[in-house]
Amino acid sequence: MQRVLEPEYMDTQEEAGSYAAMDHSIVNGLVVDRFLQLGGGACRRVIDLGTGPGDIPILLSKRSQIPSIVGVDAAETMLALARPSAERHGVASRVTFARADVKALPYADGAFDGVFSNTILHHIPEPVEFVREAARVLATGGVLLIRDLYRPATLDEAKRLVAMHAGNAPKDHQQLLLQSLCAALTLDEAVQVAKAAGIGHAKVAMNSDRHYSIEIAR
Image 1 (cartoon, rainbow, N blue to C red):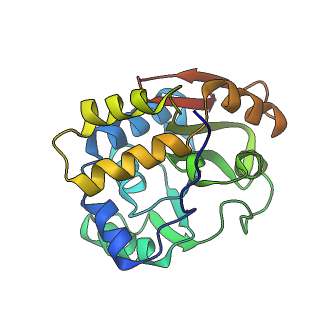
Image 2 (image 1 turned 120 degrees about the vertical axis):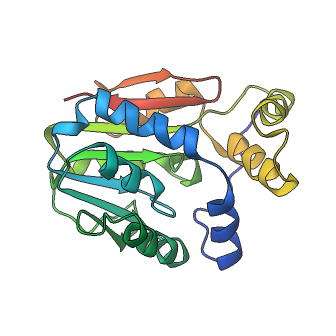
């Protein structure tokens, strides 16, 4: 199945609200768990690329003592949900949000000793740009976790995954997942992207029936 791109980011209130209404709690927990397993709990300054409504940085702050977690997103509508959420959860002193293009981050080389993202890579038309930028702001010896959906071989397989994991969800949520699967990379493509971005030493592996990750442990 050929890759079919979807919009790079959700910047309308309707799109942001629809995404935030989905239940991502299980996946968010898995991302945080894996980041901590890779050594992320020892980080001092962490960035979440494509933070959306900010759920993962907030959860990470609750499960760790990391003093500074920054979430960036290109969509102001998403950040408008993230900022008050951090206030409600009582973590705004350690979790901050900024508007930024993940392909051109306004941070110095090696500015963060922890870099992570969840299901953002498939939104990027040129994924090497994203991974290269993630690697650029990662400090030597830091932790990297880029987790994303993978593209099945056929449309029928993608529909099967949607039925399995979102069969009881509203139709628009099912359609979003299907579009995301069709926009994602295959595992082989992800390996090539990591190499082209200069992190060929990173581990690239499947970690569920629909997710893979690009990882560098502490």
